[in-house]
Image: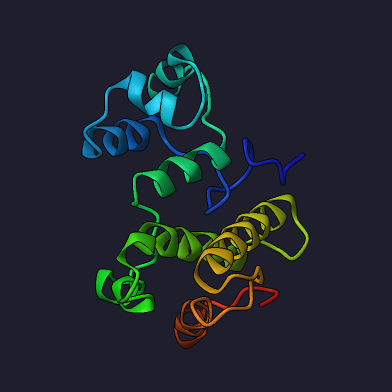
Length: 161
């Protein structure tokens, strides 16, 4: 099983290194207990990841980076996020999460489990925001278009829009 994320060459879908896990947690100013709670795992699991006794699953690493806002591509700037719905600053966190979800879709192959999970997050959040803002659900709303466009401009195009 060379294509399993726990084996083979390192890449975006591989396990993080223990020193990276610890450094990211400390940068987020979280205790091990707080970090574990953030990704819905036990304290002992988190400790084993930092001590290189076990490998952290790539999906939980990605979730940690999303929740601590460290996984955003560099071309998605703070100013860009603030410009998406300037009249609705209460949705800034959701806009950032939409960008994260689209980034996930762009990085994974079409219909892979990771692509499906990111697409679900994208659609679910966009529908919820659309319902609140416009009174009707629909992931193809004006606030999603600038995010997709920014990725396309930077050569990161998801397999499905």
